[in-house]
Amino acid sequence: MPRTLSQRLKWMGFRLRLIIEDRRNHAYDARHNVETAREMPLEAAGVDEDDVRRGNTFYRATWERLIRRAIDQLGIDYSRYAFIDYGAGKGKAMFVAADYPFRRIVGVEYAPHLHAITRRNCENFQSTMQRCFSLETFCGDALTYELPAGPVVCFMCNPFDEATLERVFEAWRERCAAGERDIRILYLNMRNVREVESVLAAQTWLEVEARDTRFVVLAPRLSDQAEILERSEAA
Image 1 (spheres, rainbow, N blue to C red):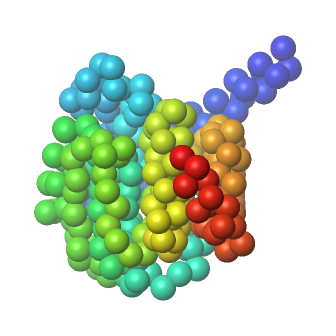
Image 2: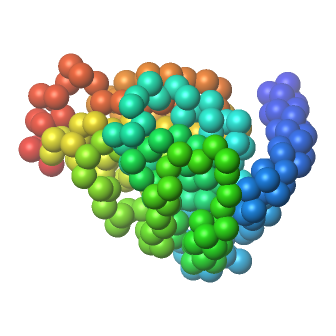
């Protein structure tokens, strides 16, 4: 019973936070001439019923301050990196990232209606702080998307179920094993990153560079290149 009560209190706290952040989301949209705040079930966004669960069933805008806090922890020369938003939704993280001097920004989204909104938002987006002007969109499955060559930041805010998340991490591991080791991974969860702790803990080829309750920054370990290559050859 105490544990159930604790879970209920945490959920009530999260719901209250959503109300507060919803106002901030709408204010962000008004400032930047976009529409990212309105929530949407994935079925209504054009996703087949069989694929809805893979995308955690629902679109919800990520909080601006959370995105910024995570990006600020990267410790990289942004101009060398492409920023790839997995599960871009309506493009909120793309637009926040555009205030940093990334080489390019790509939003990957499998829901057709969300992708269409993102494209429209890209055309309308306005920011006096914008430093990256190369914003691109890709409508398709994250499992079939091929990362561009060179340094990349892979961003995601709880976009997949665990099975899909595992496959995405495996694709990144294989890319790293093939020699493209300059990768940073930002995983965000507006409730708590521990919800996918089993998946994160299995990524022994990565190390934590920064961590908070709601985000974690990961990068390839410098000491285990041989292990990565050995696992790749064994597969």
